[in-house]
Length: 95
Image 1: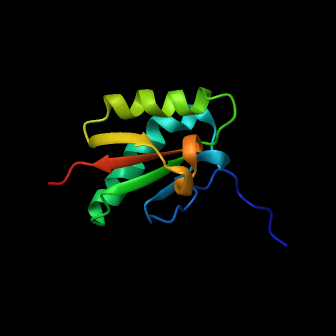
Image 2: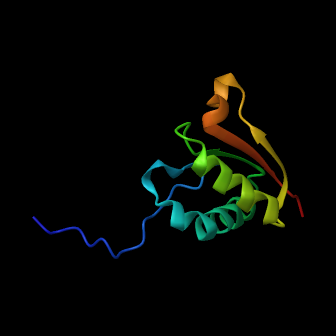
């Protein structure tokens, strides 16, 4: 059996849901804009970013990055059916 190569890039499904549980917080600054670009290329304008509830540190990091991102029209915590305060709904700018 071949050993996995952990240096290979991870292929993410681009479906409008980004679960950050498997990523390091230091990856968020590059991951969010790259994912948003791919969503826009596929005409996906609403993204659910799952950051978990925990201490709220990752949520704050995500929200800080969203405030700086020109692709983001608006964002808010997901409703109870979408993960509550463990996820954020991001509306991307069209065109």
